[in-house]
Every structure is written in C-alpha cells, then in structure tokens.
Length: 167
Image (tube, rainbow, N blue to C red; front, side, top):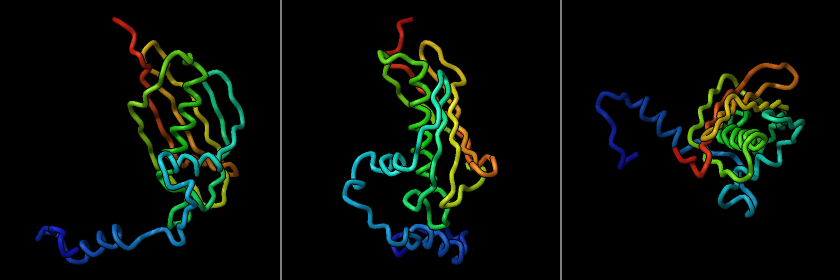
C-alpha cells in the first residue's frame, strides 16, 4: 500500500481491510489447466457445470452443479460464474425466438445477488423471454436451489438485434 493514496478521513483499520481484500484474498490452489487460460475461459469452466433440462420457445431451463471450479473462497458460487451462466442461458433463451439472420448484442445485464448458492449443490436456472420485438429482446434468468426452491440470484439481460432495422 506504499504507493496508494489514502484519505486522511479513512481509519488505518479500514485501509488495512481494503488492502487485505485486494492483495491477500486469493483462491487457494487455483492452478487452472492451460485450456482455461484464454479468452472466454470462465465460460468454458461454467459450461462443464451446466446441463440443459428443457427448451421451449421463449424458455430454457438448466441444472447447474456448483462445483469447486466455479466457487469462491467462501465456498459459494462465484459472482463471475453467475454472470457467465446468465449470459449463456439468456443467449440460448433469446435464440429460441430471434431468427438466425439477426446477430445479438448484449447491451445490458443486471444481476441481483439475493443469497448464496453453496458449493456442491445443484441450482435450477430458468430463462424466460419477457419481451421480444423487432430491435431488442429482454430475458429474465432466475437461479433457485434445487432442493429448497429458494431464489438465490436474479438477472435481466437486454439484447439488441444487429443489424438494427431501418426506420
């Protein structure tokens, strides 16, 4: 922290906690194989944990196994893994209603972390198209613990269709 500018209004204890968060908290034994050390590698990790349960027009349902590879130091699902799964499920869901002639561009992704999905549990991930029109599609994705039905994460994704229709 010697090069860090710390406000005089911040206590030494608070500054030390921030330092701990950024410099000392790391994944223990996180030696990832080389195939996971590249572009989109986190999505590759999550794809191995995700199994499709059902696909219908405007709806996709999957079962997600919260394995240690997508868990954080607190033994619950990593927030980045939540985002990667949301992206995959939302794209799959949007594709059930948007033609292949349109390219999808993820314009907005909002996530709510309501609770935690513990490691070594299964989560039901349900994606539903809320709205789909000529220029955009909005998808909601919910994560519920399989055994309890408890909502743990909720997300909305807005996709823009490319090319944009002429006005």
